Length: 125
Length: 301
Ligand SMILES: Cc1cc2nc3c(=O)[nH]c(=O)nc-3n(C[C@H](O)[C@H](O)[C@H](O)COP(=O)(O)OP(=O)(O)OC[C@H]3O[C@@H](n4cnc5c(N)ncnc54)[C@H](O)[C@@H]3O)c2cc1C
Ligand code: FES
Image (cartoon, rainbow over all chains, first blue to last red; front, side, top):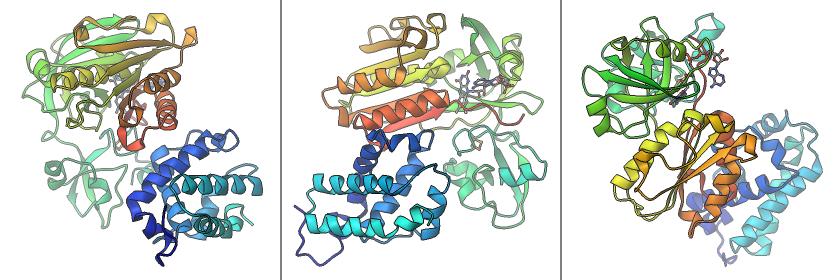
């Protein structure tokens, strides 16, 4: 169990960069295995994609992030037909990943709230 | 930098455009090509001013020249023979020994500025005795491959500096090794598998050869003689028989006692390498345990 009484961001409580890199692979695997989401990742460079996902997780977990709204807009602008349901699925996979890593529900909620806060950038609104 | 030059009408040779193949190697005569262009180069090359044009973001004005005789070893075509339909084995004898790790690739230079990358199919000891061996798929009109098919023994070629990260690293002797290659992508994998066993690798070693149709299995359906007795599992995957190399690789992974500990080497066409990488990742492997060489076609002559 990852302790919630510790005041540090979840990013640090999980174990910083190495732990988040491991979590990123679990998360990315879930996204790729999702029949609705996986077509969006056809033909993308997996290494580059993992680096982007790690930046996303770092942000959602309150770590030192360099992810900007502009990056998010640009990264998703060319994806046809993405909408709120896709964002919800991604946030669901994030929650499930954290659950598997023993993160407590209040922390999962908080990470989901950060991820949701960039919804408009992702959807280009 | 490559893209910038192309916009000005200057076409430099390139292939992977990802810093892997070294086709675009240049040497700075003055100015600073910047750190990005030197990443992944041998320190001795970087120290002599070499950089990769496809990765470079020059920090100053730059005068650069194509790779010169200091990094191109003169060599001769020694032997060539057909391994199968449109697949040629070529042995090339360098004037001085060329250092490489089994599984690496090297640029081949024709006198007229044509540069192509080929993976080395044999190991350093064999290469010292027989010359470096390549398995070359011959494309109709191929500037290098068709020329090699007609090159008489004794024909001169240049060899660049071997590069690439597809090679065996000792350290986890019990880990399952999965090696999957389509077409001539099997060539470097033969060298890596043999090297792993020679280095004392105890874990299961599985080689998968993917081909469009049975006739393209130029090493045959079963373990080639050179690897027999090394305890290597061989699996042919023929598309026209409905056998898919990515699925087969995932099956083989799932059959391992400890899939998460596996290491994989993938070579060949971009499509099959990408799909196999994805299948292995979904099967539980970390991307860090998967080494891949895409046999990207050359972008400009
Ligand atoms: C890291 C790396 C390692 C490589 N290792 C090997 C190897 O071990 N063995 C090997 O055979 N090749 C290998 N290649 C590919 C090789 O470098 C050449 O691209 C290939 O031999 C074709 O060159 P060419 O001059 O004969 O044909 P080109 O003159 O470049 O092309 C002639 C025509 O052939 C066709 N063609 C060329 N390449 C392809 C392709 N990949 N797929 C479909 N059509 C194509 C095109 O229609 C093209 O118009 C490797 C490439 C890379 C980047
Ligand atoms: S390294 Fe620059 S094109 Fe391959």
